Amino acid sequence: MTFPPDRFVRSLLNGVNPGLSVQDLEAVPSARLQLLYNVKVSDGPSLLLALPPPAVMRLLRSEKSSIGSEAAVLKWLSGLPRGKKTPKDVAAGKVSGESDGSQRASNLLSEYLPVLVRHESVGGGLAVEYNLSRPPRGVAISSLSRPLTRRERRIVDFQTGHLLRRISTQSSPTRRFGLVADVLSVPSSCQARRLEGGLHTTRGAESWSVAFHALLESILRDGEDLAIMLSYSAIRRHFDRFEHLLFAVTEPRLVVLDAGEDTNTLVFQPSEMGKKGTSYPEGINGKRQESRSARRIPIRPKINRTPAENPDGSDETDSEDEDIYTVMSDSQGKGQIEVTGLRHWSNCLFGDPLMASVFSKLPTRDFWSGFDRPLPGDEDPSTDSPSGVVEDEPNAHIRLLLYECYHAVVAVVREFYRPQNDSSKRELAARKQLGEVLSRLDDLDDLGAPRRRRPSGEVSPAKRSKSGDEDGSDC
Image (cartoon, rainbow, N blue to C red; front, side, top):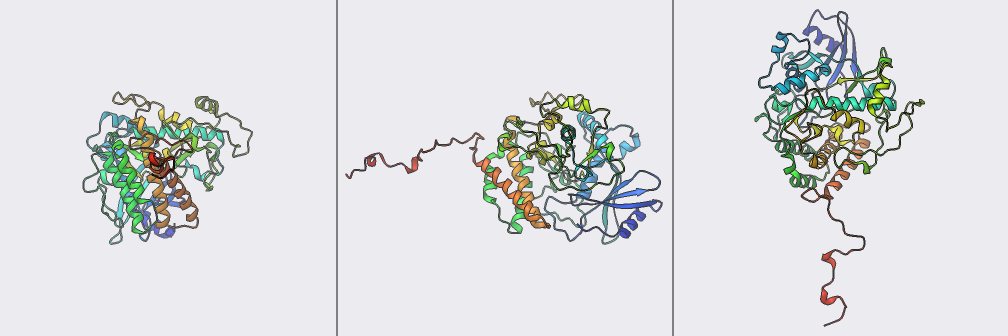
C-alpha cells in the first residue's frame, strides 16, 4: 500500500492544530485498509493518525466507511462510564439506551481502548476523513523484534481470550444486528458506495440470521462481480440448510472481526522498549500446529499436541499441561508480556461473538481459559453457557463452520480485489480451507448430525440388483 508523502500528512496535521509540534512521522505497517502514522510530538504523548485507503483501491461491499466506523465505535464506548472521565467527557459521546450491563462492560473494556482525539473530514471537494487518537501502549505481535517464546505465547493467548470476552460483553445500543456502519448509522465516506444488499437504510437487522445472510451474500456478490470461480451454489445451499441455527443468537454483541489476530493484537513487552518493530513472516511467532482431529466438537477442543521446538531457541521447557495460572504466576515480576489492546477498531459488527476470525483458527486451550474466565458481576442467568456470552453451545460448532466458510471466501476474494506479490500463495491456502469446511458441512445432515457412512464394501441400494435377478437366471 502506497503512503502519501510526508508533506501532505504534515499539512493535514497543521490544519487540524496549527500549534501541534510534529517531531517525526512513522508509517505503521497494517493488515487493514487504513493508512496509519505514528505522530511524535514535542509536548505530549505520541498520537496515531488513521487515513482512509487510496481512492483508487477496490473495496469489498463490507469494507465501507472504515474510518467513520472506528470513530463511531470509540465514541460510543467512551461515552459510557469509564475510569477517570469527567462528566463533561462522558456526556460528549453519550448514546441513549445503554443498559447497566453495557455500562459495566464498557468500564471493564476501557483500559484497552484508544482515546479518540478527533474525527472529521477536512478539505473541499476532495475531503479527507481521518481519525487522530492516543493509542494504548504496545506494538502488534506481528511487528515484535523477536518471536514470542512458548511461555509468552501461552500468556498472550490467555489474555487475548479474556480481551475477546470483555469485547463480547458489550451489546448493541439499538438491539439490532449487523455491521457497525449500518447499526450506528455511520455516514458514507466520500469514496464509499452503498451497494445493494446492505442494511444501512434499516439500521441493521432484527435477527442475526438476516444480518449474517446479508454479510454472506455481499462477499458472494463481490466474487461474482469479478467472475471468481467459487462454489457459490454449495455455499448458499449450506446456509439454507443451517439458517435456523442462527436464530438461537438473540443478543447482538460487539464483535471485532480481526481481534486476536497477531496483526491487530497489541502487546507490551518491557524488553521491547526503545526498539523499532520488525515484521516477521506469518508463522514465525510460535505458530500452533494442530491436527484436524483437534477440531472443536463441542467448541472447546481437547488439544492433543506435541510441543514444538521453542521458536527462540531458548532452554525454556514449560509443559503444555502446566496450568496457565501457574505459568502467569511464575512470570510475574520478570517483565511479563501484557496484551494492551487492538491496533484497529474499524472491522466491527454486532452479532455472534464466535464470528471473530480467531474462533475459526483452532484457538488454544489457553485462549479458551481466558475467554471463559468470568468478569466481575458477569453471571448471566438468562443463558446456560459456561462462557456466559456464547448462546446455544450445543450447535455452536455448526455455526462456526458457516463463519469459517465466510472468512475463507473473504480471503479468496480479497486477493483478486487487491492482488499482491504473494497473493497466489494466500489464495491457494484460503481455497484449501474453503474446500475443507465445505466437506465438513457435507458430512452433516440437515439436523446437524453426522451422516451415516456405509461400511466399506456395502453397495448403495440404488445399485443393487432386483431380487428376481439375484441368481442371474433368465425367466
